[in-house]
Structure formats: structure tokens, C-alpha cells
Amino acid sequence: MTFINYASREINCKIVYYGPGLCGKTTNLQYIYDSTAPQAKGKLISLATETDRTLFFDFMPLELGTVRGFKTRFHLYTVPGQVYYDASRKLILKGVDGVVFVADSQDERMDANIESLYNLEENLSSQGYDLKQLPYVLQLNKRDLPNVTPLEELTEELGRKGEPIFEAVATNGTGVFDTLKAVAKQVLTELRKG
Amino acid sequence: MAETPFIIQEHQFQRIKNILARLCVECAARVVFLVDRDGQPIAFHGDIGDMDTTSFSSLAAGNVAATSSMAKLIGEDAFPGVVHEGERESIYISVIGRSLLVIVFDERSTVGLVKIRAKRTSFEIAALLDEATHDSDQYRINKNTFFSEITDEDIDSLFS
Image 1: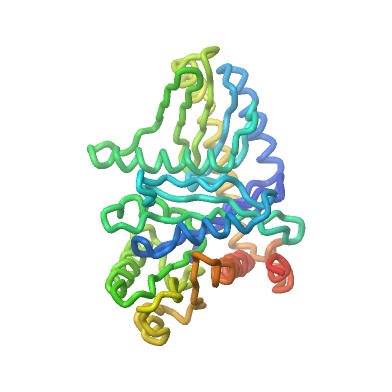
Image 2: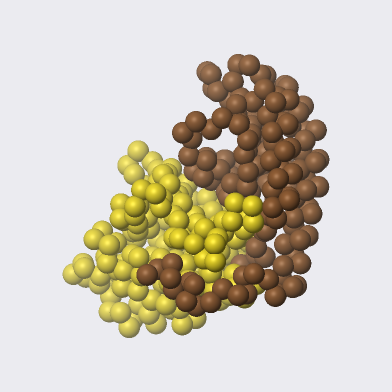
């Protein structure tokens, strides 16, 4: 839920990166963190296992600049992708303003993508949200790998509502900021609508 | 659709700051925070040193979200208060409706004192937040607010 503070003239919004295990959600955040000026970001917090798999969430605050004198700060979260962390995923979706679904483009991960997308719809619905009404972007990650599913097929399987779709290679930053901009823009447009 | 934005007006913010300042003295705390349950910092008073208050707020909300879910799994509705005791610094988190009162204190205070003072203050904060929530709802009804004046160019300028 967007939080607006008239005293400190700040707009705070929450964006969640969702997707199956090892699809590159944390890598998206890491790239954004590494490429952003120190004054525009807070710490990147990772609640991860000893093997660097996300256990609860990753989090980083990012300041984009000012709109009409209000500082806009986006709180970026990832969820743990592994199937058995569903309770954590539900919690992180609370108060969400926009969602990025990071799909793993590799052929063998198609089923995992579909399962995770259904899980997102279910978990949003259990919190009273409808994916079709939320600011939402689909990112097709790992496009640099040799065994990727064609773009058209992924779009047909995973597209939900004519959402913006970006091809990405999160490890080198391709598509990472385009994805973030697209979802942030939708969130602010939604705020304008009231 | 996302929920109605939660808006704190300047006068409400000042009142919250005053309440937190009083509470900080009353329970001899190092710092007192008010945090939204979604992890957004609302206000704080006290000595934050070089603490990253945004991350701290997000983690406090994650902590309460996790312990509340654990409560449900054992048949409790929620844990209204959570205490973390360290060697030098401790944290008490009290759930007040949609927000969390987070008190950081050291050996100059005690859990008992912090709990009693927090409980007394929580009614005041709850009333103030109810007022802010009511005003925020009006925001959706009266769409002719400041934010409806934001243009596409304003939004694009953030990304240029």
C-alpha cells in the first residue's frame, strides 16, 4: 500500500519480484543495487540460507527522484522461489503496489514458471488482490542461455493481460532497469488515478 | 487493484512525533519507531546513530509478519507483543492495528517498564491512525487531490 507522508513530503511504494526458484529475482535486485548511486539507495538486505538461497526476502529501498516536490521511494522485495516457502511469499505480498514476475526462459523451467505464476495469482487473491488490477510486468530472464523457449511461446503461456514484457539477462543488467521503470510507472499512474 | 494510499498529514505527523518523544523519555528508550505493518517507516524519535531506519522498519515488519503466522499455527490469533533481548540492546515490538510500535532500549530501562508505557501510548496512537485512515479513505472519494495533477511528463522525468 502506498504510504504518503505530507510532512516529510515522501511517497513510499512496495514492489515485489516474484518467480520460481533460481529465476534471477535476487540477481535483479543485486544489479539495481550495484548500478545505483549510493545516495539513491539504502542497504540491500538478504535473508538467505547459507547457500545464498533466499529464505524470507531480499529488500532494498530505492529513491527515484521527486514528483511535484515529493520524494518517491520504492521498496523492492523479492520472495523465496522454492515451493515450500509459500507462507513467506504470502506475507511479503501484503501491501504490495506492483509485481514483477521473473520467468526463467530455459525450456526445462517452463512448468516451474507456470506453477509459480498460478501460485502468485492464488496468493494475491488470498490477500484480496487481483493480478489483472495490479501494476504488473513480466520479465523473461536468462535470454542469453542456449536452451531458451521462444519468446512467442513464453508470452502465450505466461502473459496474463497484455502486460509489458521484457527480455532480460539479469546477470549483465539487460532489461533490468526497463522492467523496474515499467512497473514503477504503472504504480505512479495508479496513484494518480486514486 | 492496490489498496487506498495511506496518507499522513503534517499535523498528524507532528502529533505522532510528539507522542513518540514523550514515550521515549517515559521508558528511557534509545529510540522509538512507528512503522507500518507493510514495513514502511512512519516516524521515529531518539538516537538512531548510523542505523538504516528503512531497513530496520522493513525487518521489524517481516519479523512481526512471521511471528503472527507462527501464532496462528499454534492456535493463537496473534502475538500482540514481541521481545528480543540482547546483551546490551533490546527491542520490544507492539502491534497497534495496522502499525507497529518499535522500542529500542538498553540496560537503563526494563522490559516491564517498556511494556507498560507502550500499552498506555498504544491507545493514543491507535486513535490517531484511525483518524489518518479515515482521511486517507476520503482521498479516494475526493479525487481532486494533489496527486491527480501529476502528469505523464512528471512520471517520465523520474526515469530520464
